Every structure is written in C-alpha cells, then in structure tokens.
Image (cartoon, rainbow, N blue to C red; front, top):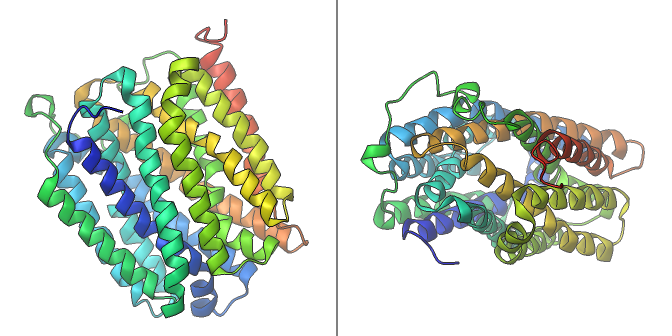
Length: 402
C-alpha cells in the first residue's frame, strides 16, 4: 500500500512497539497473580478479569478526553505523553509487591492508554476515505505484529523471573515515546483543530456528529458487542491454555505469537482486497461469521493442532473492526476524527469492562465443572448476536445485499 503521509508508517511502528510491550507480559501474568495473591489458577483468572476491568473503567473516562485533546493540540503531543505514562506504568508493575500495586498500575495505564485512538486519528487525517479501511487494517496488523514478537519474548524472558517482562515492556514504551519525539510530524492541520469542549469529551458527546446518519446506532451497538466477544482473547487465553490444554508460559507465548502472525497477514493481505471486492458492510459480516465458528471451535478443542488450525482460521475476524471503523470515519469531518476515535476507545472500554468480567467468570464457572471452554462458548454466542444486529440494523437497512 502507498502511504499518503510519512506519519503513517511512524504511527504503525509506534503501535507495533506498543503492542510488543503489552504482549510481553501476557504469558507471565497468570503465575504472577497466583504468586502475589496466593490463590489457585481458577481464582487467578477471576482476579485477572477484575484487573482488566479497572483498566477499562479508567480508560472509558479518559479515552474521549484524550481524543478531544488530540483534536485541540494535535496527535503527536498526545501520543508522546501517553506513551511516556505507559512506560511509568510498566516500571511500576515491575516492582509491584502486592496485587494492589498491580491494580494501581492498571488504573494508570487506563488513563494513559489511548494510544490506539490518536493513532487511528493519524490515519484518518491523511488517508482518503476510500483507503481508510485498508489503512486501519494495517494499524491492526501492526498491533498483531506486536503479538508475534511480544509473547515470544515474554516466554523467553520468563527464565529470568516473572518481573523481567515488565522491565522490558517499560523500556519499549520509553523507546516508543522517543521515536514519536524524534521522527513523527503533526498530521492535524491548524485549520482543522477545534476548541476543547467537555460536552464532546465523553462517550456520548464524541458520537454527536455521527448519530444523524442512518444505521449509526446499530453500527455502534454492533461494534461494542463485537469487542466484548473479542475480549475473550486477552482476558482468558493464558488461563484457558493452562486449564484446558495444560500449556506452560512458553507454549502460551508461542500460541499468542502464532495468532499475531495469522492476524497480521490477514490484515495486510486480505482486508483491503475484501473491502474492494465485497464492500465494507459485507466484509464485516464475513468476519463475524468466522468469529462465531472459530470461537465455538476453541470451546471444544483440546489438541494443539486443533488450536493452531483455529488460530489460522481466526485471522478472518481481523476484518471486522477496520471495516467498522472505516464506515464510521467516513461519516464525520476532519475536525472530529480525534473525538470519534476517542469515542471508539470508550466503546472498547465498555467492552473491556464487561468482557473480562463475563469471559473470566464463564471460564472459571466451566473450569470448576471440568469444561475449560466456557469463555469461548460465550464469545461465539455474542458473535451470532452481533451478526444479527449488523445484518438487520445496518446492511439490510441500507440495501447492501439487494
């Protein structure tokens, strides 16, 4: 793909480094919670869900504020501050002596964790609407690329102790901030900036310019429902792999890396072509159908080859969010792209509040009854519901399948 502005590859690299830092800590998080909390693995999965919910609650309120600030002061400055705070957060978690410290670290990360929103706004600033779906897909691919490198590194660093991955993540976050400082130009033109308005700096106000469009409510409902289902990965994968498959941290790391490879390749090579061939609306439906099948498959899979086959097929789920984001981005003007992406971050936060709690509870409930796939079974049901919302509330309403 031809980049329309030199800030785009820098934003992609920033997202790659950021997701590497996040992915590094995933393989060791279950054992760290077990150690600090002196609990069993099933209870640790619940605590992990609460921890993600704390992140999501703070992120829900901070996301629209940071998005609106990027509409006022520019993307570069907001990204720089957020990534610096992320580095501080990982450094804090690296020395956390109790579970309470881990929860505090997640709260700090929730406030600073709006990097995905401003990065998406960079794409929207400099990319024509007809190419945004593919560009958003590349941003998702960069995030997936981090899951290739991050968990693999985390699986290796575990040999140096459960704290080593957090030190590495802090270092990467600070390096990321330096990359932004040294190389990234500002993409929001002064003419497109707007005054900061608290009425827009919340999840409802962020979508005000969008709600006049037909099908917008169904789009937003489908987006949040899909993200709730997709939260099954970060909230339960490490626990699911230990409970259902008996995998150790190294095996978990490699499986996450494989998932990142699959997702990245799909978003680089399939997203743009699927949108051109089928349109954004039908591309969403393809991804949702794949999600229902793959999540259902995970719920009953118990062999390694089955898991890796599902990882490959699950790459199609990466078509969903870039396509939805492209549809929404085309419906607002340049001065409101940051607010829109901040609002999308808040939707993600709603999903990250509800998703981990629901998925980890479903996992723990099933695990206590010798069924390790409860979280993925719930995710499959949610995919079916999301498919129906999108089909009847957006696609058929606009006559896309006629």
